[in-house]
Image 1 (cartoon, helix red, strand yellow):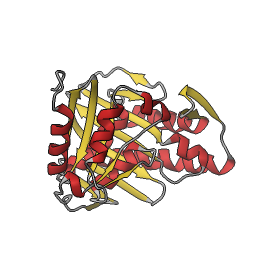
Image 2 (spheres, rainbow, N blue to C red):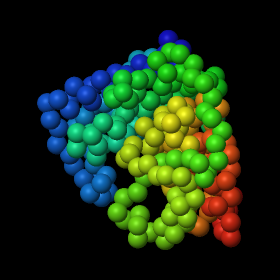
Image 3 (cartoon, one colour):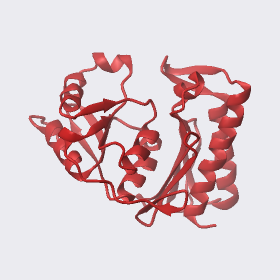
Image 4 (cartoon, one colour):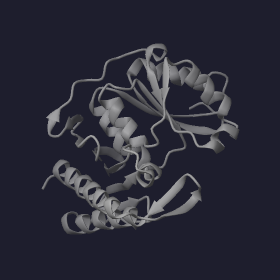
Length: 255
């Protein structure tokens, strides 16, 4: 099984298990905040991915959101987000998914996302993105001012020192979307449904799977340091370029 097929199998099996456990009900525990939850389904889905990787890629490293950490005997590392959008998953909302990525010698090679609703499997490898095995067209290149922009905001973010910068960026777009699942948003960027995605200080499992999808669909993705934060951006090349200019204007920490 090649890496493309394995990534598709990992997210498909993880999402299927999570969906099955959701029908019987699963209690949530708080991690870092009231909005940051974990369930038995998160842990079970991550354990399933780890078992599959031990079977098919025993020498590869693993980094999972729910604690999986396996050092690589090779230069290969998988990141795993068993349920991205756990708050939505618990609440009965549709925006959640399972996501994985693979880096080889520090270079992003594969990303995969399985959305339960709609029933879609997205995989990027060899620089191209597919949906259910079929290549997707390149994202349209649109300007920030005519784009929808997706982001993620907890109530605490409204009191953060980066809030004015966030609001300035969001205010430059045509409209705003907040789904509660970064990987679901990045699928929509790769599909050309959303023009730009931006979020601060992302963990690898929240960023790398969707980044691969966007880049494999002809989009742009980058990380810039500005105003004391690392800003992760992906979308139409023009929209990303304009957003980076807004973020780094007057920032001593721009990178």
